[in-house]
Amino acid sequence: MGSHGIRFRRAVTRLTAGCLLTAGLLGAGPAVAETADPVTEAATVVPVQTTGPADKRFNLVVMGDGYTADEMDEFRADVDKHLGVLWSIEPFASYRSYINVWAVEVPSPESGVDCDPGLDAPRRDTPLNMGFWGGCNPDSVQRLLTVDSTKAAALADLVPGTSSANRQIVALAHSDTYGGAGGSYATASGGNALSSLITPHEIGHSLGKLQDEYDYYARGVAGGVYSGPEPSSVHHTLLTEEQMREQRAKWWRWLGERSEAGGVIGRFEGGLYSTKGVWRPSKHSIMKTLGYAFDQVEREVMVQAISAKVNLVQAHTPNAAPIGADRTVWVDTLHPVGGELDVVWRLDGRQLGTGGARTIDLRALSLSPGAHTLTATVSDPTPFVRDPAVRGSAALTRTVSWTVNRALTTPEDEVEAAFTGHTSTASPVAARSVVHADTTHPTRGTVAVRWRLDGRAVDNPGNDRDLDLRSLRLTPGTHTLTARIPGTGAELRWTVDARPATGSYELSEPLRTVSRPGRPVEYVYDGEFTMKLAARDDQPGSVVRQFRVDGDGWYTYYGWPTDADAPFRFSPGGTVIDDLVYGKLGKSRAVPWDDATPDYGTHTVEYRTIDAAGNVSAAKSFLVTLVEPGR
Image (cartoon, rainbow, N blue to C red; front, side):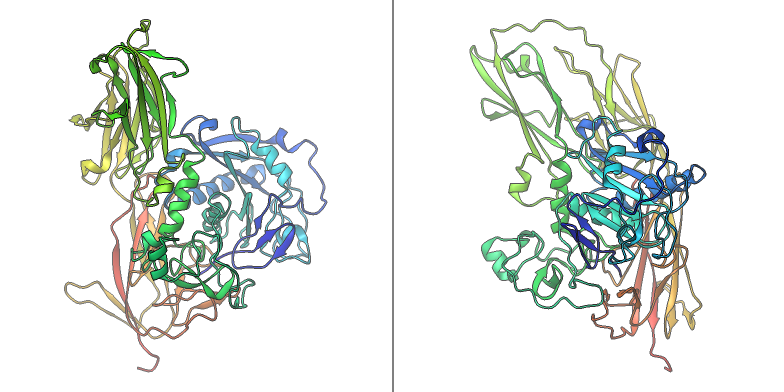
């Protein structure tokens, strides 16, 4: 199962398993006829997902090249597909609310991009000069898809509040040919079967500074023996498991845990383009094989990287000067989809029992005369992080402090109770998500939020700004959630989608089918067979289909590498495509030198769906028995 393109540094093309990682260089490509107007004049910025002000969010800016005005619907569909996959992968699923998404639509005079699929293909007149072969360079490789970085930056600059410090650019080429590149900017062909899996891998590089875990430098050539020192990469090591535990080094905290990418976190040989002499945490993860998840080690890095692009404290009671003890003090926080942030209040170092509330009334504390120090510490208790240094970093912990003096008097205000921010009501929310509603902040008193589900009051003590729907154990179906401010007409209303998309499978004709009471249906084959996964949902949006074999990691279904509409093909030894191996039944095989011994016998294939709201369906399964030919 595969990885993608190549890697690029300091303007030197380096063939590897995966991406083209750049140091801010994604070339201008060949000289072609330019459009009459500057690229920005024909562009339209479309907000796809807005979770907050751009200058307070991590911004994903997606732009297309080679899509004509009549083909812009294809660009929008490609964006939807890429985002659907991204939101199905942790930690993007849980931290989706930290990310704004913008689409920059630029109609192209001509359809397609340069040198697609070969050097003899025509050059096209397109706004971003995207092209395969490293921009039509005969010394490059076909799958290297470049973009004019200056023009891409100019388009991204059209999004107010974004800069290179708080955004990631993804450029999609109007092509079904496999290809991409990554680093400062990421590129991918919009319509290829594997293209939507390239995007999270590239963001792993550019945002998380994660390294490739490939055990080869050029496709089809084993990487040899690693001879360097202990890698600086957090997910590569020379240490044994015992040494990691003894030294409390690398991923020692995760050893023995079931890997999100399959198997358990341990020590697997190969990585950093070497076959031997260096080890990685899991057998396969998204940094080794497209289609799998980030393992726990990588996921922890990505949580910190995403969180470092934002501030957990979005706003707070002004603290530039001392405040009186006759008022309320407040903090507004971010709201992860996957859980609630903790807020701990302390007065002169002593923790107060506030139950995580975002507002505290100083009048109830009966402060003694003189100056006091009040602090609010906002932290993310996510189980995705185990390293105390990461937990305590500014990405996951922020503290605000005030000097409080009882001698000061706070002027009365006339702040009207109202909602100031909330989870979007424009589309359904998942039954496994956290919904939030922020309010205004009177100087005296607290604006309360009351939640109801299908008209029934929902108890939500402490932090009433967040409601974790998972705690409600919703029955399958559609529900109505409301948030109200008592005594006012202010109300928010959401549709809660508690019915995951349904999945189904279609297999090629087996030798025979076996049905036994109490067991999944069994299909018997003596060679390769195909599997097509389909999904249906009663809500709009892209649905991601996944499968796994014999309890291995969940793998995103994309059709077949050469054809997104073709079914996935399983075979005893796997199918080699462009020096990578796909679809070996049983023990997985990623490269030609991996063990190709057929795993005859019975295997369990599970499948599930992840819908646009984020609901994950329960896994269903069937059995496949692979028999030796002639038996």
